[in-house]
Length: 309
Ligand code: GDP
Image (tube, rainbow, N blue to C red; front, side, top):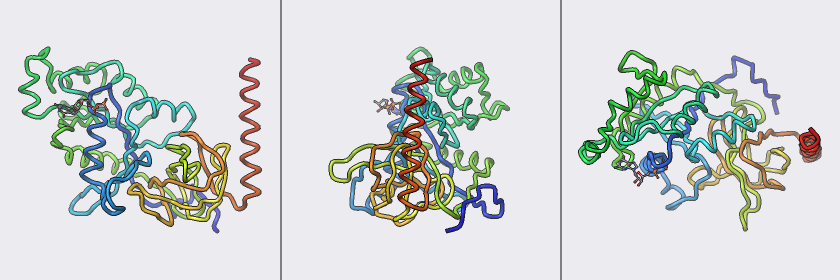
C-alpha cells in the first residue's frame, strides 16, 4: 500500500471537524451531548440503544447538504487535559457551555484556558436560556445571558454580536432549543479552519477511549487523523499492538474502514491502551511487536529517570 505523505497537498481532502464540549459542572454538558446524540444519530440502524464508543458523528444540513461533524462524548476538561498532557490533540473546536443562571465559574475558566492553550477556536453556548428557564431564574442573582456576555467580554472573549470574534449561541439543552443554530455555528467556524487530511495510505491517529471488555477483550476507539484504517490492518497503539479483527462505528455497526475524523472502535489489540496514545498502521506483526516493545522500553526508562531525577 502507498506510503502516507501528510504533506502531499494534492491528496488533502476535507475532513469533518471534531468538537469537544467543556464547561463548569452542572452547566449542561451531558444534557447537550445527549440531546445532540439522540436527535441526530441513527441508533436504530444497529437496532436500538448502542453503547457509546467515546465519540459520535452527526450530520448537519448546510444549504440543504448534510455535512458530518464529530463530537467527543467525554464531557469536561478532564478528558481534554489528560489528552493534552499526553501530547495528543484531536479537537478542532471547543464549545464552552455556560449556564445563564450561574455565569462563568472556575471550571469555565479552566476550559477556556485549555482551549486557548490548544489554540482551538471557542464557541460559547449559553445554556438554560429558554423563555421558561429565564422566567424561573429571573430572580436568581439577576443572572441572565446578557450578564454572561459581559463576563465573557471582561475576560477577553468578546461576543461576535458586540464586534468581537467569539460566536455565542443561546440554547436550552434540556428542551433542545436552538441546538440547530449551535450546530450551524460549529460548521461555519469549521469551514473557516479548512480542515483537511490525506485519506490515502496507512492510518495514523489517536486513541480517544480504551478499556477491557469481558467478551471482546481489549478495545480502543481510534480517531484516524490521516490515512484510512481497514479491517485486517496491523496496528501499534501505545504499548499494545495487534491485527484489527473488527471495527465498529458509533452506532455499533460493523464497518470495514475508517477515514479521517471518523471514530471507530477497534478489536484485536493484545493489550489495553490509554486515551491519548497514538496509533499507527505497520506492515507486519513482527514490526508491530518490535515497535510496541521499544515504546514500552523507552517508557520504562522515562519512569526510571523521572524517579532518579
Ligand atoms: P454537566 O455536569 O455539565 O454535564 O451538566 P448536566 O448536563 O448533568 O446538567 C446539570 C443539570 O442541569 C441537570 O439537572 C439538567 O437537567 C439541567 N439542565 C441542563 N440543561 C438545561 C436547560 O437547558 N435548562 C434547564 N432548566 N436545566 C438544564
